[in-house]
Amino acid sequence: MRTKTSLEQDMMAKIAAGEPLEHSSEMTEEYKENLIHLMLMQADSELSGGYGYVPWIMKAPSVEEKLIVSNIVKDEIRHAKAMYGLLSDLGFDVQSHIDAQQLDFRLETDSSDIGTERVKNDKRVNIFYYPIETWTDFVMFNFCMDRGAGHQLEDALTCSYAPWRRVMEGIFKEEVVHIGHGELWVRRLAEDPATRQDCQDTLNKWYLRTMQIFGRPGSSRNALYRKLGLKRRDNDEVRQAFHKEVEEFCDKAGLRLPEWQAS
Image (tube, rainbow, N blue to C red):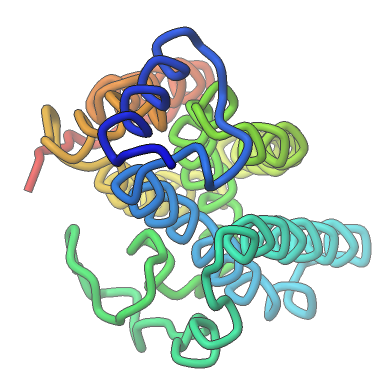
């Protein structure tokens, strides 16, 4: 029987050699706890995101858009199912967790600013607590948050847990489609004098909220994730990649990004 020390040595040797882990028997408890934490954040965010989009199936401005929103909801729920499946494979009690949460909860008004705070016990990224009150909100959520999540989750494509890698290949492709929908509509709203100011105001709101999701620069927890091969970049490196991409797009669309300061 392997000792705790030999298990850790074997695991870290595989990670250092770029060999992903396939089974829980290959990982230490520390690795497993951090892996579950990251995957649960994604799973809860996917499910909560899908719930938040549901009303916009009815409120979308055309039948074509109702179908697009329906497909986005389907994608998000399927992503959640895939992530919860990975968690179940690791022995996590998914149903008890979901039953104990309010993943459909949203703040009552969009005027609240919770910064980086959590308001419930679930693990969703806290931007999913904000309500989506207008079509422009929906569009900008696609444009900002789906893009921000894509930048965050990009590291999972090369992470040290092979089942997560494989699941992320399909999820990542679909998130790119969602971002494209947001880009199409941002261009439309920015080009129309009647909607341009609303587009700018809504961008200001969701851009600042999305900049909060990446975590603190140089955090010790992020350093541990990188040591374990669960992430490969510092939080601020991911944030700046997101910022650069959004800034380049907005420059072409004639939109301005507000100044963001870490809270």
